[in-house]
Length: 179
Image 1 (tube, rainbow, N blue to C red):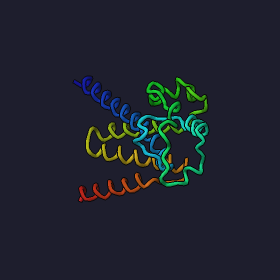
Image 2 (cartoon, rainbow, N blue to C red):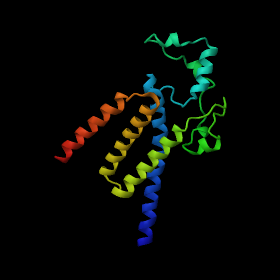
Image 3 (cartoon, one colour):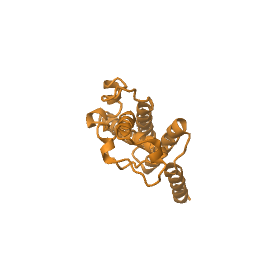
Image 4 (tube, one colour):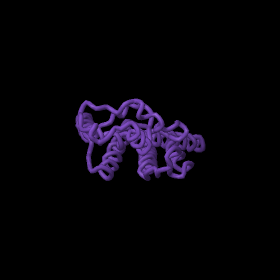
């Protein structure tokens, strides 16, 4: 019976790691796009910022275009900069590609695998220490917020409202639940 429990625990932690890797990958989207006022939903696929910058130059789009608050990057600008699904597997693709974009051969920042790994480790620790509980979910969400804020602050010196206000709301609701 102890062996079965160990297998279930290992599988549960493994699922937490997998969830952490996937959510960490999405956090990288947020870390890049939110400080630049880009949508995290559109385009729905990840893109290489270096490939996009090259494409924008080819289309004659300059920084001056971005001064207009109504300006949106045209869909055709993303062509050629989209990352294929098989090049977007958390941690694994970074290693397979040798930390370089398949299209432009520019270096992929180390932030990407670090955020994915930290999120996976945080989720695994939450499940390992707290089990599959609402408290573990709360701490996993808190870790997501903190990882995102630290990475965004280090990279862009900004703390996006989407995470600071969301974290405050989460803390406020959980304080009421604990009262």
